[in-house]
Length: 220
Image 1 (cartoon, one colour):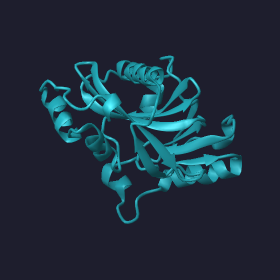
Image 2 (image 1 turned 180 degrees about the vertical axis):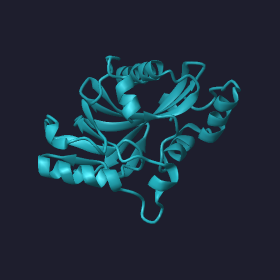
Image 3 (image 1 turned 60 degrees about the vertical axis):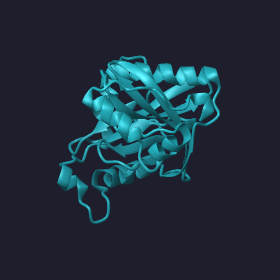
Image 4 (image 1 turned 90 degrees about the horizontal axis):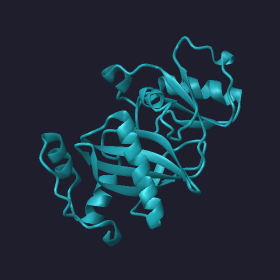
């Protein structure tokens, strides 16, 4: 997550302002404008991600983010995750994810999902809506936004999962990863567009030209 943030700093892409915290960083030395979101630089499933509104909450959230793990799994030791943390400005708006197929630097298609979250200060996902009713102009704006991120990061052949916030006519980046979405997001789009995510992903990574023969956006 930290590498993504630093790479996109001068890109013009809207993303949160951030502080990088390692185990030697003094939080007292930071100028923090609340509210902010605290998250581990590694891990998944919104573990250790929390909205905080003051310094006392910040200290507690940073400590939690440094040490959080799945019960009994010890992923930090298994994968060698460091205890680094990001403190990010809070982006307001509706949250969506975008699953994107990109091959040879060209977007083949993308699939939007509206996310429903638990009450703040946490960000656990409790429901997903595939293919929410968005205007043609907003769909075009999302496509252009996502494509610009792929181009800036040099992602040429992959399936990606991009999390965004939409507030009016502004789109902001939460994060992007070269993987399908979690939970049942791929299954939702398999059913809505009548195709198989896994098959497309395999073809991309084997260099086999992907044939876009699934349902178009307006039929999903």
